[in-house]
Length: 130
Image (cartoon, rainbow, N blue to C red; front, side):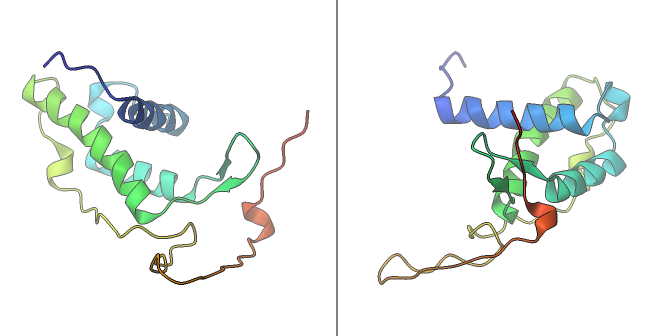
């Protein structure tokens, strides 16, 4: 399939790649184990990172699912090519989740007016010094 990637798809795969780099435990194909996938899941759930503007990023379950969805496609291809003996994603339990706000609450319906005020713990705040 020589169809060009859409920009959003490319960015999503690049975001997953960078998260895998920060996680740092997938160095060889032998490292692609169920245990490491569960550790990666915990890593992306707990990682405290910020946007370019310094706002904290808190990932929803749907966002976490997207990291796995992207990585899983590469793991499946490695299995298909015989680079790994088993596909650990066949035993990994992940739920897709519903779209929610960054604090894990369901988003309110679009009709009507709703204002949500959230106070983040200091441990989740990011500061950038130049």
